Length: 395
Image 1 (cartoon, rainbow, N blue to C red):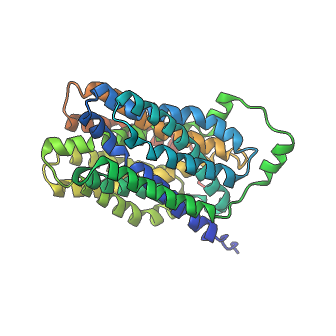
Image 2 (cartoon, rainbow, N blue to C red; image 1 turned 180 degrees about the vertical axis):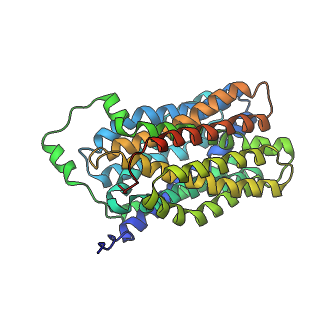
Image 3 (tube, rainbow, N blue to C red; image 1 turned 120 degrees about the horizontal axis):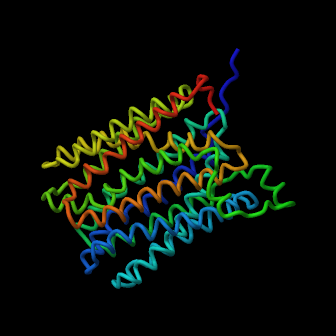
């Protein structure tokens, strides 16, 4: 007789999901609007790419230190430091219109983001029963995906119809809500953390940067978010080029369909593993990119957004659960940091490389070129699936 599944929906888990949602909304409202804002104050195409790349680089270099801290420090302290730091950096954007100074602010913001995403994701892993990690991280990942998808539509609307300053202050207000929710959340710190406090493990930058057992799904995550980087960096510019007034509709329907599909895909992961799920979703994402690149009406944006919500929206939590499933509880913080670094590296390198290509082609071509990455995700996942000698048994 099978044992009943451990309880997933506790109040701390619910508060953490909501707090993380507001954290991602606060950040993601700014993301698609910074490139056109930098362009509007005289920034070059290279600087447009650097506004994303600089941020990603900072987030990546800080995560090994955070991964190491997570092995010895309680969760709540680290979560609060990250959330307050994000709020401070968000509020600094209206201070200047000098691109170089904005790049410096963006770099420090990246450090705060790398800190916060790593500790928040690890705190979620600690609250989720191991037997329900796919489902649990799927719901937690929903706060990430909805934040990544819904907030940009709101941000684009505010930027296009009001002002960049109002956009920043609303993003800061969401950050305040996140801090309040984090403050009332009861976190779980693994026993291994308290044991490590007595005999702290030696710090190694590369040892804390890379979890060897999770390298393969982290590589797949990098390729997946490289494709997504074209969307977050250039979709507003694309909408302006095409004369499309409903760019926000892409993000809105993205969020709706990601939310609808998430419960089903999370449970599928726990039963069958990541491979078939990711292969199907990567193909859907490829199709979505081509629909977007050929869009000439708001209806096309809606269709592309819906497909992207099902495809990309379902892949991200599955990839995170795949990364975590490959390692131990003690090193879950390092694996989680590597997962988020893969996201930032994918988006950051995409913005940097496409920033050069943008000098020679239009944004629709950038979307078509980036869609190849989703085919690479499909192929790599298929290769790993073929190597599996035993059925998936969960984590």
